Length: 195
Image (cartoon, rainbow, N blue to C red; front, side, top):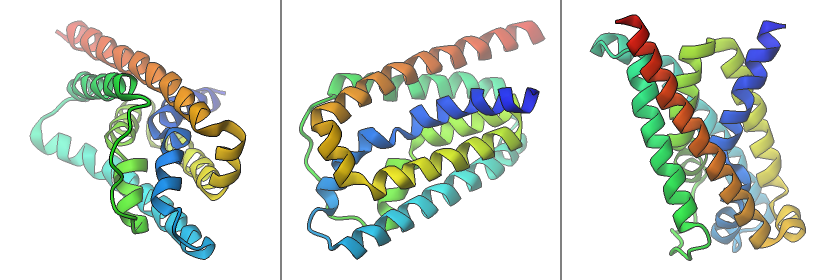
């Protein structure tokens, strides 16, 4: 029962950090000139790359922290501040037209847009709080969900519209801001209680 609870607690922050629906319009715009099989290849490479980068960061990040003498609480506070900045920028810039980068290779799309700073920070902080198993399972579920969303990009955009995905992105950014504040608060309380 504890594992299921930890899994559910980890599932939502990672889902909000990945935020695949918000990335959908950019993905469609970047791949609109590609053939269907090319787009499928980009989706597959993106998802695999994002998963591998995140897993590598989760396992190597803890070792780097130990080597540098960084506490999980330190990273919770720093990670919370970074997530809060990302969330604020997402809210402020929502709906703003940005120049599109050139069409991606799968690896190029997967790393900054799926396994970006928010995803990496969130997973590493959650591992410190809940352990590897629930975080990895939550990550796998969210990566598979992102795979489905990007595979069905045209249908989802047609159903939700660009405005719908942007509205979803704003709500996700607000949730991310709340998670960030929670991380900062928890990190500070843990540091204070240990002194």
